[in-house]
Amino acid sequence: MDAFLAIKPMYTQEGAGASAYPYMAATIVFTLLMQCWERYLDWRQHKRITERGLLIPEELTALVAQIGTGGGSAAASTKGAKDGGDASDASDGTDASSTPEALLAKLKEKAPASQAYALEKSRFKFYSSTWGLVKGLAFVLLGAMPYFWDVADATGAEWFPGTADAREIKVSLLFYGLWEVVDTVLNLPWAIYSTFVVEARHGFNKTTPLLFATDFVKQLLLTAFLGAPCLAAFLSVVKYAGPANLAVYVGGFFFCLSLTFITVYPVLIQPLFNKYEPLEVGPLRAAIEALAQSVSYPLYKLYTVDGSKRSSHSNAYLYGFFKAKRIVLFDTLLKQCTTEEIVAILAHELGHWSHSHVLFSFCFSQCYIFVAFSFFARAMGEVDVYRAFGFAASAGASDTAGAPVVVGVLLFFMVLWEPVDHALSFVMTWNTRRMEFQADEYGANLGYAAELQRGLVKITFENLGVLDPDPLFSTYHHSHPPLIQRLRAIDGHAKKRR
Image (cartoon, rainbow, N blue to C red; front, top):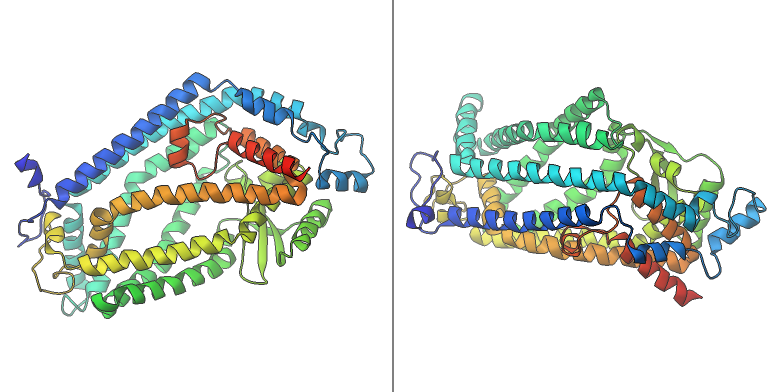
């Protein structure tokens, strides 16, 4: 036990002393405990899928069977009035493929494919997570962090003349770039396998090898040309602020950076990867504009995006500030759902806007940064943390005990803050599920209960979602509630309106 508590990385910097506290051992133990917990949850999910993957839960069957009963909906009535009762529509104004009978038949048809997809993803996650654990422990035990820093520092001494303090930020960029390149190369085979084997085997992947390579190069270039200046600016702010004002200065920096990113990303960065086009004039556009007007949503532009060139998974989202709101629809969603179902899905998205969920998430992230760096300001001079991971540090040498700022930040979030992150992650997952229920309720209260239920069912079977996930696994991992829970809640809201 004493030997384990005194464990040190194989590579240490010259002059690295012994740590008085077993920070490295504690990090390894915490990592292994979390891995055991998450693999246990994975086992529960895998077992559940194996045993019940081909079965449609009785409650789900009952909920789907009664979709639209009890008076139809505003959307169905409007469609019927506009179309004059097209012969292809069902009696309640819905497309024949959207009837409860058709949806149940499709769920049964998709059940084997859904089970196979879920099981393969489960197996892939087990192996990729195991690789991630081995890689992470190897980096720690081998002393990759101090080694990469010494390599970057030696290179920087040749490239950037001057004192070590003067070139610290430049060396930090070399260090972080080296770390990211090695990590990316080690993770690349898993990304390739996931895209071209797992996703392709089940009919989702549309990415060509050329497109995959192009995306990869674009991401590297964006990381270099945008990430490097941001990291340099962040390190400059930390060095300038000092412990006393660190949280305020860093909080202000990330606040400005977040606003800039939210503004620039959809306009300049997203178009580098996908083609955005205005939604063509027609019934769908008219219905969406009418919905936005009915709730006073300041819709500025309405786009479709060619998500199908990479995957057949579907999505829709809203973004924008103040009076310049945008709505984006994936072209895959247009193929999977009817006009009324798409409008209902957007009614759900408008529920997030109405309840200020995006604003809440933004404010939470800013508070998180402030609190985290308040603690970092108190811990950044903790000599034993640096020594435990192979860095030379001395008390009173500087605010970071003579260690580089970027190393102090990485070690703080990897060691001291990691348990807090895990707890907050679960809290945020729980809160996100709560917000999804609120958004569903908003859509149901607008009169789109049946259409939203049909849309959710279609998206689930088109994306081969798990119909009956393990409750504990779902509660811990899934940001969106299971289909049964959402249909049940929407049905309850619809009944209250009758």
